[in-house]
Structures are given as C-alpha cells and as structure tokens.
Length: 103
Image (cartoon, rainbow, N blue to C red; front, side, top):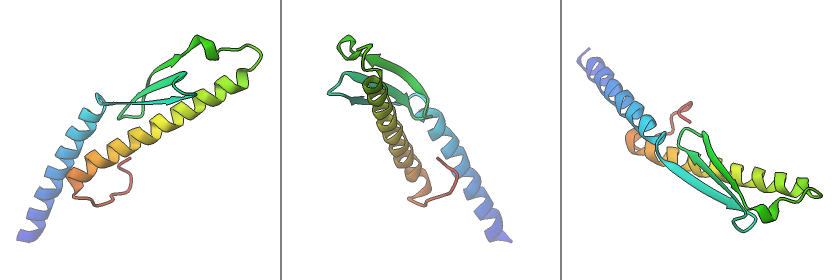
C-alpha cells in the first residue's frame, strides 16, 4: 500500500510538471520558410499558427497553385518543428518515456 501511495504522488508531480511545460510551450515559437524564404510561417508549441508572411514577389495571380504549395510546405514544416519541440520538452519531464496522447 505504501508503494501505491508513493506511485500516485509521483504521478501527480509528473502531471503538474507536464501541465507547466505545456503552458510554457504555448509561448515558445518556431519558424519555417519555403520558397527560399518567400513564405515564412510562425507557430507556437500548442501548434497554433501565429503568423504567415508572404513576399509580394511570390504573389502571381496566374500561378496561385505555387503560392498554395509554398504556404502548405511552410505550415507543414512549422508543425513538424513545433511537435519536435513539444516532444523534447515533455521528454524531460517523462524521462524519455513515450506516453500516448501527450502530443
């Protein structure tokens, strides 16, 4: 019984630390670009898109598909970077254990 109480206490501490890390991640940012920097995307650790900057030279009404592709590539890369950042931060709390549902 003593071990169960200790285990529950440790689980509660880990949960509190993880909540703090997730809160901190919402203020951390990652940036990704595509098209040689013509499209720049910023995202936070909560995978919220914060900004998109598009160089006016890439805006061509006759080639909207290229712009869409560049935006998609930048957003996908920012999402990947954000998830990687979250994984790194949470692994510090979990000791590297992969706990399903954290990301």
